[in-house]
Amino acid sequence: QSFIRVAQTLGMNQLWRGTGPPMMNQIIMNTVMFSVFRHVKDMTSSNDETSFLISSQNASAILAGLLSGFATACLSTPTD
Image 1: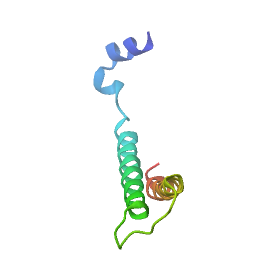
Image 2 (image 1 turned 120 degrees about the vertical axis):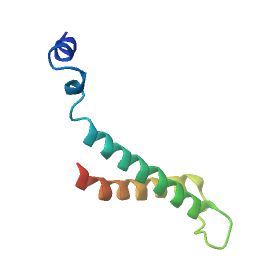
Image 3 (image 1 turned 60 degrees about the vertical axis):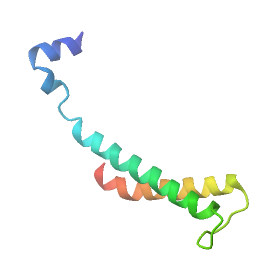
């Protein structure tokens, strides 16, 4: 009921006002998290000379998750 009242009295533009900054924060967080995870996972599990091989796929995923979470926290905290 309050959704309809706000939309009728203030309009649809005012209903969604303020959603831009949180959406930009989510874009930054997701981009950093997935790109760092993929990069670390590729570095630790590929079979070429430039990789740091980890024998277990689970350990590789855990390391990639830890580093991507750290990078995400460092880069997205100023935008919170």
